[in-house]
Amino acid sequence: MLRFLYCAVLRAHPPYFRQRFSDEMQAIFDQSDSELTRAQLLADAVFSLARQWMLRPQFWEEPAPVAAEGGTALFSSLASSKPRTVALFSGAILSALVLNGVSLTIGYAWEHPIFIEIRRPTIVPPAAWKARPVMKPGVSEPVEPYMFTDQGRVLLVFNSPAHPAPQTQSAAKLTSQADTSAVPLADIAPSSTNQIADTPMGVLQAYAGTYVNPAPHGLRVLVTIDNGRLFLDIPGEFRSPLSPLPNPQLLACGVGDCWVMFSTGAKGTVDRIEVHHLGREIVGFRAQSGMVF
Amino acid sequence: MKETPNTFLPLSPATLHILLSLAGVELHGYAIMQEVQRQSEGKYKLGPGTLYDNLQKMIDRGLVEELGKKPGDDDPRRRYYRLSMLGRGVLTAEISRLDDVVREGKMRLQAKPRRA
Image (tube, rainbow over all chains, first blue to last red; front, side, top):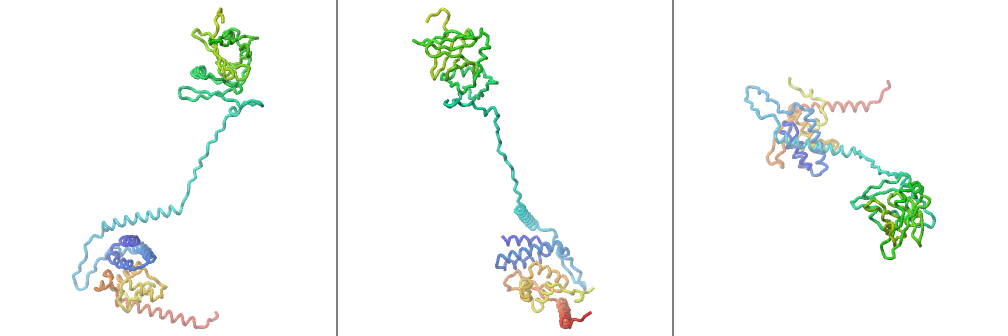
């Protein structure tokens, strides 16, 4: 490698100097026996290269022959003074090597690492999200009512007593069709009973009536109006006022783990009730006037 | 105008050592480098670049003659050089100048210092 570089440096010398001395300088280089000496010779050749090109312009070309005294014939070479193609090629290689060397040196000398600060995003939930229902002593951990759709979407419903979340038609439909299991009331936002109390009597009467389970020995469910409020009465079991839930299709009973859903028939009147109580589902159909069960 | 030996004086250390190494014998470049190193007891090392740069100037000014290659040499690339008559005169004049310098220096150093 050093020999190759040394040859390249010698070839880059001015032509006249190169023709006269490059072979001898190459011979001296070949005679050296250690790498250190060769490196020193290479450095010497580089200095010589700079010296010859910058300080010895009179030796770049072969001096013109001076007429001899006495009229003796003289001969001179008519060779072109332009550099040979090989020399130009070698010079290009040498230049590329020197440029790469300088670039590497600069690269190692000035290492300026660039630090890019990537901050982890901080998500601060709204204060309303942090509000959790206060657990009463002795009450088991409430279970959120799970919501889902059949359209590959996740439905997030945030219970808020002040602003009930509007429910889409499909969600309402699914909710009405979906689950027959009981939904615990403990985690459902408490409702204002005044909402039913403020409801016109005509509307309440649309729900009031007797609902009968068609199964043999099926239960009877009574929905009555008392003091402007709807009451659910399952004879022999319990009687409880009904309160609205954020889901307008559902009503909550006053007893634990109980909710009610009414359905309308083809005529648009309420004719079906589902009562979910303690994991039990009671379905009843509205008894027509005059029917005897 | 023809140059006289005194017009070359004083000589640079490299020129002086090269002329001195060629004073008694014809040498090639590598031998000149070794001879210079021997003369200076290793204190002055001449690189090929400096050597041939000085040889070029000395040949151009007629102090040194190039003899060319010698048949039977170990390395056929070697060329031999010798001192020209002008070069010998220049070396003689430089040695004489240096001798005067040495003598003057010794005389000055041996004399007792005088108070102004």
